Image (cartoon, rainbow, N blue to C red):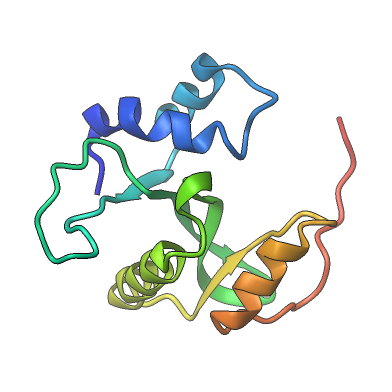
Length: 141
């Protein structure tokens, strides 16, 4: 999982989700209270040989929150699999790791938001056992 130095490796992957902002904006998240960034690095090639992956194949930015509908949950603010690596199982692997990390911290749920129209993302999340609970409602300030 990335250390502070890992941000340089993770930002290009995060920018696939946040393409409308610049790198400086993404780096500011390091200062957010309780925001943690985790990255999944490929450790082996399909043929079983080792790899020296310098870039994560998937990243997740999370925080533990207490909200009305769940006493304690792990909220995935950002969850991105590197676009050319999607469909290879890395998203499921990272979700499983997050699930274990959250359980160790007494979380009751893992939650995230999926944008309207992101049918592929929604299909993936549902295949991983996530269920729609409601809808996120917001207003720009």
